[in-house]
Image (spheres, one colour):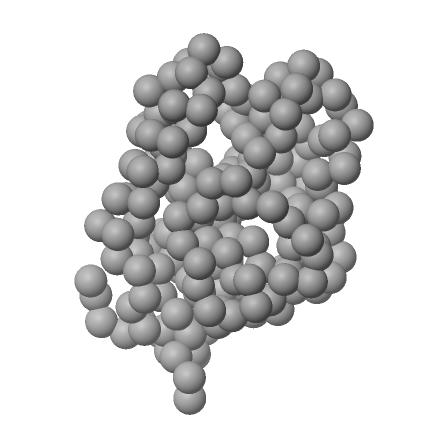
Length: 180
């Protein structure tokens, strides 16, 4: 794993290696493939952050599945704005479908607590959540994560799809904001 990096003048230290991330994703894909055998679930990736996670997870599945994306936003800089904005709508019919939401990180839970009821109104057979990361200490809204790779402390992270003001998404590993 690389050394410390700097983004927008802030220092970040290595936190989760590319190897550790890929191993956990393989485990998650195996569990989902087992649970959804013969069901052809629809995965909904939450953009922008989950695009790398969604891609790697989808490649590891051994079942028939479909994928679509939606863009939800609630961040500005390193803090949640508390307002959920939908920028790109869902273009798939989810009525009667098994839906698995792919999220990069669940921290406060505000974004998902606003989005999940919108999905439930469309009549899916089931809705489950697959998340790369969660920060339970930051949770302000109750959210159930059905498939999870890592539980992390309430510290800002960047890399592997997660950004700091639009930079850092392209990093293969995850970095944590260094305490100054």
